[in-house]
Length: 219
Ligand SMILES: *Cc1c(COP(=O)(O)O)cnc(C)c1O
Image 1 (cartoon, protein in one colour):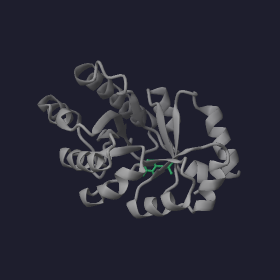
Image 2: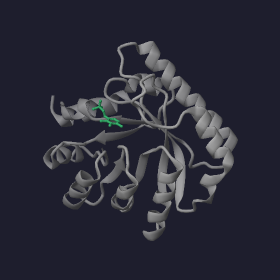
Image 3: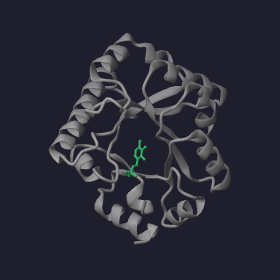
Image 4: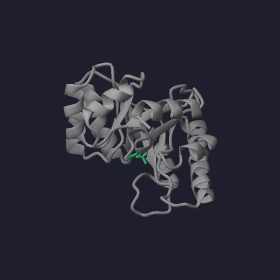
């Protein structure tokens, strides 16, 4: 199937309140343009150099999302170019994003990455550490970042019940953080979860933003 057909079939499968981020990392600009021509505008990249190249080359109405692990030294390249950073896993990174956003006179929307998978290799906060951090109030001193939700990746496994349990846990953490720290913040509303192999389960368990690469670009 073509990229166009892939996108249309995903759009027809997901509820309309779920946002589709087309993960275009490692894909050439021509492939991205094929997706763009279907009306897709949100694309996700995980390396700052590739983001810069594509940002400079491709249409300006694309909304770029950063989904990869981010070094503090590279924050300055990412902040001016993206609508949302999915993968924030420390206070130091938040502080750096805040500083660069201030320089750019913008408020940077970010998601807090949670570690819900069994694999140690995955990054992100665990539930207890994140709640301790939010209780400290340190995040609310950062005026140029806005925490709009959470992001995570499930374990890489064929055990769909395991995957489902992990996404369910993510939703519980989201609900609990929302109630405790963001009750009056309508903007805290995003659960970024689900990739090519597991997005249907993620949506059933509460995700409202899916990050899909290989199913779109036939990788
Ligand atoms: C690559 C990537 C995706 C997309 O994965 P596919 O399996 O290709 O859909 C989603 N999220 C993150 C963080 C990724 O790095």
